[in-house]
Amino acid sequence: PTAQAVREAELLRAHGYHAGLLSLAALRDADEDALITHARAVAGVIPIVGFYLQPAVGGRVLPLSFWRRFAAIENVVAIKIAPFNRYQTLDVIRALAESGREDIALYTGNDDNIVADLITPFSFGGKELRITGGLLGHWSVWTQKAVELLRRCKEDAATPGLLRLGVEITDSNAAFFDAAHGFHGCIAGLHEMLRRQGLLEGIWCLDENEGLSPGQAEEITRVHRAYPHLHDDAFVARHLDEWLR
Image (cartoon, rainbow, N blue to C red; front, side):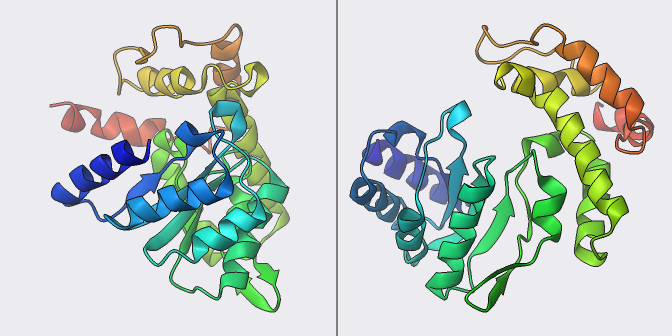
């Protein structure tokens, strides 16, 4: 896996990419030393963004000790935190706080907890860190509203209204990501929302076995009706002809 990852990093660099997102999904049985060796090899080619992917969709548990060592790799520029787990999220943030690094950006990938991640000040040992933005599958839909949400989370104080909005977004994400069926329909669910807006012709996935789960389409309809302030249908409709020329 390391040789392939290095080749892919070289390809990214050749095409002008600024950084590469480093998945460790192919190293599920490797020990911590092997993971760090792998990360260092890729970081020797291109700046890297760490990726804590939840085990339910192919990731693995990465302990505090791993993130401490990962944060010590000079060419790490950011970390995407997406374990869908509060304890594991805190492991990453604590490790970065203890590392003393101030040049590593944190991004939430926790689609189940977007607002809380973005508005929370995290403090460890007297050092406060914030999650600066999101790398989120959820933001592939209703994107105009996502931009507004990010701005609001950065500028506004945490209020009951903002926390309530976070719950509504999580409820919507449960429908899009098919949480009820272990995320089986997560890609198809996003495609379905884009199809309904006219941005896609269908919901086909690279894996022909992936599709909407039973009842998922109805759940997407429910959250769309329940939270009209979260979707950007009108914005998309205004620009659809322009975008699809």
